[in-house]
Length: 274
Image (tube, rainbow, N blue to C red; front, side, top):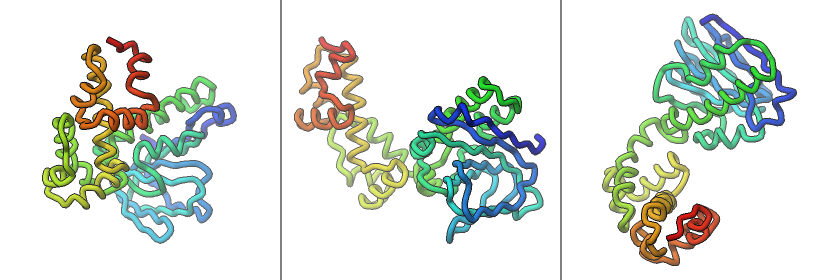
């Protein structure tokens, strides 16, 4: 692939929740210094070689498999430290841009590690599109931007913590899924990962951005919905018990907090009454 830069038409796109502003690929990324930052969000994927990224007082080495994110108007600089430093990037904006990044675990400028080395598929498709600026072309870019945000959710290896942290709690998540029907003490979950309960809580906060009890309750509410579908004749107290809630009142309170409605309302809304 040869170096390329696409400037996207944005006048009609600003009404969309997410849209691309520039898309590009450098066979050798030159040094870049922006004391006042950049007006849009940016995502860079390193494909070959090594470079360095400077953010305030932090310094990162970025290489193949790494991505780095730059939020609007945040001072930064980056430069190659190898003979060739191949990067692909997209800059983007829109009222939902920050929320979609947060959904993927990105809440500030910084780096992340991908699960693979290949160019992210939606970004590759954007690069392969014609450089034209028709409405249809820009709408297609916007769709691919949305797909890229969802792809990040899957491909980023624990962006808010270390790259091994999500792997470390996967056995805990699997244990939770298999034992939602019963009480799950924090000490028991910590023993699965061979760590202390306090450290397990920190891992949950860094990787899933919530406490273990919050995560467990959400999974139990999802289980209760499945039970409502598969056993329409079941009473609410039976569903609560089979989903792992010892107290029906607590189940109803958690259900409303998670879904915004009471279990009975949920059943009526989805036609699941027995």
